[in-house]
Length: 385
Image (tube, rainbow, N blue to C red):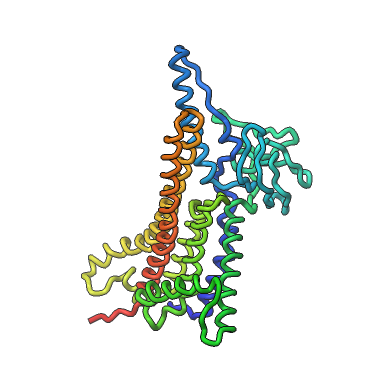
């Protein structure tokens, strides 16, 4: 069935309002405290062991440095002073549902130093990015694989990624309200200030994505969603290139949420022809109808799956390469006296960062373009001869 315009706008608002709650703190996290630890090994040959240990330590440093940037966190840490064992940032609210609502602020000691927090008679401890129920001593009852066996409360905390989503939402709200005000105040409908940068992108989404793929008669109903998803992904990708250390679109829970939104829009907007082509393909023999039906049903789910994997993989790969090169530059600075090697590493990092700006736009374009294409295929009227 085809939904009305008002229903689609309400669906867009509801989905994006719930997005920070869905993509919250249940994602595995590697803490900065773990990234400062090194692995020591013992072998029978001391000379060979020293070289092997140094190589393993360098690998661990690069790996942990990259993973710490990619993973979510309950404490917004800008950077860490390894010598002083300090993390500079600010606390985020921890929201737990455990026989009632438990709310408290995270702290550096709670996230990085193993401090036990007591709230309403319950004790909680942070371990490898997750919060566990424990006793006053902080005993997690680890098994033989060093995994906690104690219970976990339901975690709906405002993590670093959720804070990034909220920041992007505020920026988008301010930007588009400013654009709307300029249209009202300007006698010739020409935008001013930030609106001059936003209007060409809005027109681009309308004329290059929505109209060609959905059609002139129906594209307006879907413009709120397409504009929301395009600018949200684009802004989050750009924020990931700043020193804020955000990696929201590199979190698979966020890309899953965005793909689910497209999936719901496509299937709630699908007309009779759309469902007929899925369950009983017209114009083909009956045996082929039976064969094509499971393939088409599978295609309903592979389309959003391709959206979420493409966005997640490209952003994660780009951030991994950039952060890895930065980590290598630090290693070269400590191990080599020649500044040329460090300079080459920084030049490569700068080049890849500039390339990531192009990727930030390209991934927002691809996600929005394919979403409009899928919606267009669901609402298109077919002429059967």
